[in-house]
Length: 359
Image 1 (cartoon, rainbow, N blue to C red):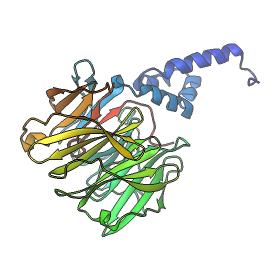
Image 2 (image 1 turned 60 degrees about the vertical axis):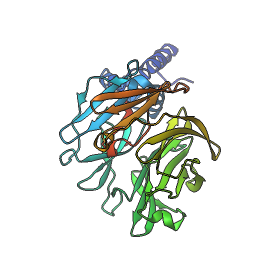
Image 3 (image 1 turned 135 degrees about the vertical axis):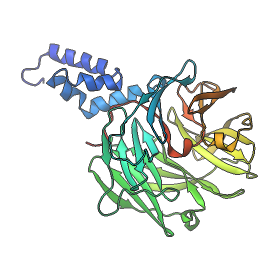
Image 4 (image 1 turned 180 degrees about the vertical axis):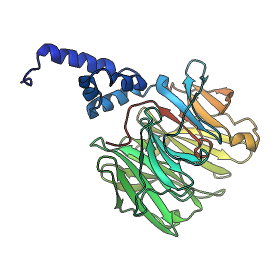
């Protein structure tokens, strides 16, 4: 049965409009909302946002956000030349102190950021400029660098959530923020006591296949390295092993979701780094390839570098653009993925979407 006043022709037009607009760029969707009331209502539905987001996760919609002391800029990545395109200056829509903003996690165009001068957490969509403060008067939503870990995810009910792991004076607390109900709640987490120590570095969470994954690495040569997994629907944690990488140097594991398969770029070494690519099958890691050693780079330049990998090539990028390229025998990735930590939380690779930080 059709609603009274709605004809089959109207329904056909509605379907065509829906299919077309779920394929247009995110910024054009915002402009299309002003066409008429019917379009505004259609483009505001959760079904439209979800389908538009799924169709936006392609390389042409990828952007790099870079923050320095003076500016915040967004650059397209030109897939054909594998370099940055012209930048656009972004004005933070929230109060900040001298651009002192850290990007902690990102998913489907949403960034979870920390205002370093107040420790407050926010959700922010840099494409639509919408944002949401997550801090509360009862001390939820405040982040301390080097002690806390953050992960963004979507559950089976399409609710965007933030997992916040806090370490405070040897006590670990785990909290979940729900966009749907706009509140925090505590959940249990049983783990080894030693992981509470500040000697362990927790990565940001990487969402893949209904699970958030964190690397937990001890901050010295030969230390313990594990992966902590959080099932977002059962809200249960478990621990799996790290890939069997050499323990003769510093170890860093960077997790990426490649077509809903979890991969890890595991870098090891001291003065010369080696990076191996692994993929998770079940609870075990399978090595995909070994990258050539990184050419010698000064420490000051190294701290300003982000590595991307795509379509068989490995690119070393500074804020000014591509530094060099290493060719590798690797299956096509079709998008750009970070191989190492992103400049101390001063940037992110994200996709332009219309996903809102609030309902």
